[in-house]
Image 1 (tube, rainbow, N blue to C red):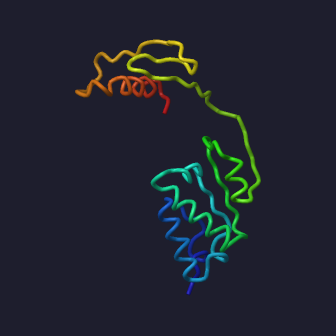
Image 2 (cartoon, rainbow, N blue to C red):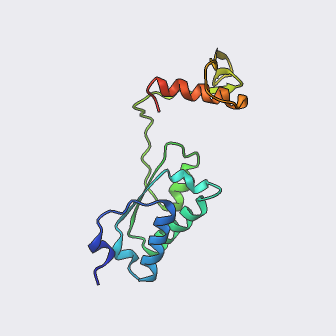
Image 3 (cartoon, helix red, strand yellow):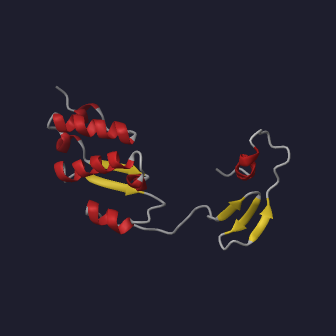
Length: 151
């Protein structure tokens, strides 16, 4: 009759698997004693139209059924951070540090513009392997970033 915590130190899960694990531990009456910390990478997915509700339900279960479990949420793109902070009764750590500079561009057809809409350059699409002419600009932009070693 080993508990989940006796058998496992760390569980790395998708949202769906994590929710199933929380449900199982709740049914067994072992949620609070089995978990001490839950790390949610990409917590902004709580707003996702297809999977967000499941993340929200799972985090709500943790908040109310195991309030001593520490929840650590991470996101680089969380527009409603104060809402999430209040909902999770969380401390906020925020940093603007980026190890790699972020440059924003707008792609319209083959034209690459800066965030103010000024033309930066036209992307070269010649020689790209595709029969889908509509997706050539996106393929060109992706290829340009990839060949330069960025991801």
